[in-house]
Length: 157
Image (tube, rainbow, N blue to C red):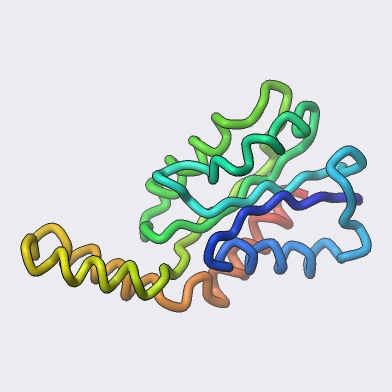
């Protein structure tokens, strides 16, 4: 099976998933989108949706089998991940077929926590939970996330 990966990873979290996909599918099978039997489309979450920088790549997906994947700093709930993935899917061109999807939490840069701590000084009720979420996200995607991603990917093949 031939495949292509289109991936935007701002902090390296989503790229970890892309690398696991290469391990599962074999690097020899990776090629251009035009020749791919399956296209893996991965993105970090930008304001609840896909990175806008991927917009120019989306027209290539008409008629393609697409596996959506990504990471987001906020999460902890499958319902939230599903809403984000629904937005990813809505960005696809007509004729692209979603055959699988996966989303997990990804750690955020330290500057994000620093910003939350400063804001918590003025509004602790709002920002202390955000600090807790930041701390929970550290180390993600972890081994369990990568294994779950692999399982979802294999289920879509």
